[in-house]
Image (cartoon, rainbow, N blue to C red; front, side, top):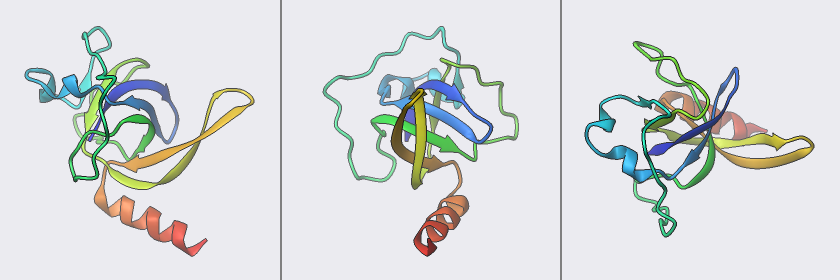
Amino acid sequence: MICGRVLEITNNGLVVDSGFTDLLREPLNRSWVIAANVSATKDPNAIESKVPGSPCIGTVFVTDLPKRGAPPIHKYDYITLLAYPAGQYEYVPVPPITKTIRKFTGTLEMAVALNMRAEQH
């Protein structure tokens, strides 16, 4: 579960600081996009679990976002989205610094395709 603040919007997806688990509360959990003006905090003691559906902790890249009925997304908005591991992404927070972060996709089909493609290379 990706639950975090949008740090960067690219043509292919979003760089997200995930781990804002309090975004999963009512009434915020009614939409996968939450306005930046919402008060949300990260639990500094949160530990990521390997259980499906558990919150992801850290900076991640999310691609293949829902399109149908999707509200506009702006930098520093929040998102909550069930996503699937799909390899890695090279993120440039400040040039010339490059970080390799985990990549997630919003669809299981794309996760399988991306992971199969990565295995072939």
